[in-house]
Length: 316
Length: 271
Image (tube, rainbow over all chains, first blue to last red; front, side, top):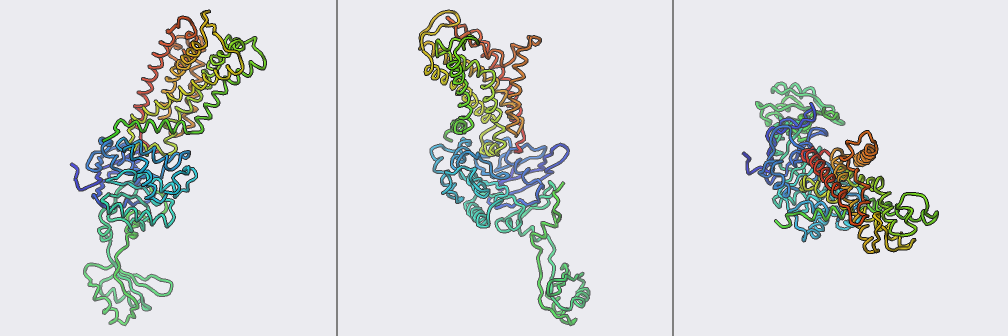
């Protein structure tokens, strides 16, 4: 049974294209009211998962529940409450921005015709396109089309927004606007599901995240939970690196030396047996000159790279 | 919820179809067919040629009949092939198909609305040829009572009604082919491919229709009654070919509509 506190829940969701599994056994749990980051390198199955959630493609096996209803069986009841931007904007180049939005709005039979013009204007205004609604879309830049795609997702009040790479093609100003748009929507109670391969973006706007790699879900939870999984470590800056390494070995820490630009740094994972407060006195007692000392949590980026691998190769 | 019939999408479909420059270019090209016929007859004078064409210089209304006769085998199916082949594949190629379905437009509803749009284009295309023919015929030649194929004579108003009836017959004739085009359009995301395949199929069917060895097949080919509208130019009107044509076209709509539905309802939308 579905859990009412979840906006999206999948169980063993799998999509195979021929012999290859694009998405395999994904159990996603997106709490209502969260801003949920869906992370993964290119080709990791993010968009395929999103297409299954929206009923555009059918799952090979597994279940998907969106806003408490089974997909795609209850598609007609679910989708009017979902705004979506899927794999980039799609518009008729020979129509104006306004005409495009009216056309897509008229496809939703729950969208009232008499407020259509006003809702289209409001959506254009919200994404900063109020001045160019009458221009044909073929004259739009990529960033303007992306904004128009966001406007399309906002034509009706939505319970859930699914935004696939929403900042693609946007300038830094536009990226900031999208972040503030997402946070204002979240403040209104809309659940926002954002996919991205850009960690910084997710770190800045999301409360929760999940990480995909090669079609599998490798981690999910609150950002804090995701960061906590990694082991903290220490980093110190000193001119006496070799002495520091042996002093740390005396405490049971396996340290290594990093050669930085100006200074040498010594780093070591912090095991559970050592109290970080004891380290600096021990180093000073051993005659090590300590210039800087810090206990570091791994960043989300470290965690992301650890989960998905570092290479540039698209996952096979 | 209000407006649950969703006529807004049908209105939008018609608006988008007739707001495209391509649609108007095709209608203009169709209007040029009777105009070219009329001008050619005016310059060279009649004499030899099919019955309709030789009568043009005596009665301008025959430009309409001659225009439709010339447009039916090639030009009309060509434009219907473009519109029907583009129906789903065109939406897929602009990326609007996924947004229509996520709206949600409903897959069956979208197919039905697309088909109604294509059918309206068939009507507009046939009427364009008929009206352009009547106008250029009236401009270049005398207009008067028309002698029918049965030898009876009818007045101008009656003749115009017959022309309208023939335009409706031609529209009906194209509906089966339009359903085939819609089905082909659900098979691909490349609109040009769907258009070309639809038009090639039309040509192949017309060739098959002209081969005596395939005579057993002829009554089942969608183009079989395309040129049988001469029956509407008799007194009294012989409705036989109209009825046979209607049954045949309805058969094509049912079969290819079902195929399009079977294909589209389960299709993975990856465009």
